[in-house]
Length: 255
Image (tube, rainbow, N blue to C red; front, top):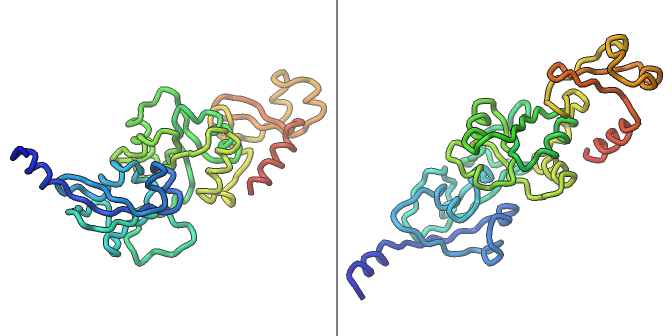
């Protein structure tokens, strides 16, 4: 064996990793719900190792190295046992090094180009949701940080951006299942403010007199409805049409 090959092998180090609950969804089947070896060189941070394995740091809330709670920057030297946990909603881990920031007072989102239909549904529920199909990954992260928004994405790579703080990888591809997934995973059932935002542009809705909408809605609608709302952004007009009860039932079902 060549001397260079021997030196390279000497630099290789191994630690034992174990991921819990939904974090396993980021792993290949052979590594799910079990301990496995991860080999590396040098002394990388535990954060770098976790993301190299495939789990975005925004999904992690607690890391134990040899049973001790640590932050993302702890360096691994080999031989450690690393346990990685997702965001805790019901268990009080306040005495430990919790890696996720405190929940936002008002939950606001920014979504990537793949979640346009989810965007409209979140706005119907009253969640300020920013969507633009021309944003690059680094722009999404910058806006999320500056405006305290949660990133929703189908692209795991966005959540591995160093500056990303709050984010969630949406597992489902169906928009109906996506909105239920987001509501349940982020426990948003008590935060709904339906019919306060424009589903098209995210603008605020304000009540307007029916006289003001004359000529902009069908005459039959004017005769049947007395309450109207207008978007302050794009000017779209809303009223309680035949679809209103279906939307109400959908919202109640989500709760």
